[in-house]
Image (tube, rainbow, N blue to C red; front, side, top):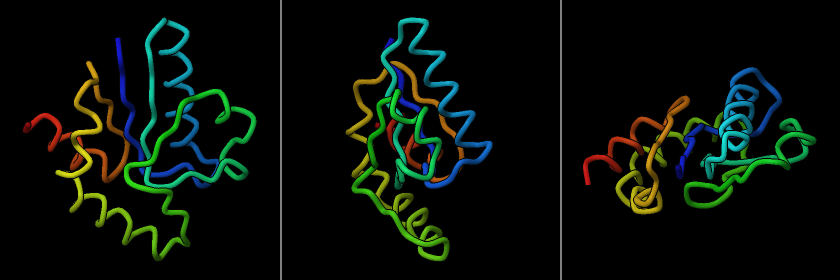
Amino acid sequence: MKIAILHSAFTESGGAERVVISQAKCLEVLGHQVTCYVNSVNRKKCFPGEIADIHIETYLFNMAMPKLEYITAIYLISLMAPIIAPKLKGYDCVICHHQPSPSVAYQVFRK
């Protein structure tokens, strides 16, 4: 099965990021093809040893920015959801974690 996991960002080593990374690894062990989509990724700050093992793509481009601008990125991705949705067209399953994931997934299933 081809699975997309949508998350806000991999910019720090926190609990939400750990859940997404663990979920992606477990699904891959079960034989699924998994891709994680995020606003931004910092491979040096967000579990560097573990994040290297999963396939990560950005919604548009890597929006590595401070916290204040990060909020702006969430709204931008939500507004750009209709443009991002075609990237997710071929997936059998889309799993959403945190904003703007539901907005993007809604556009995917709307089409």
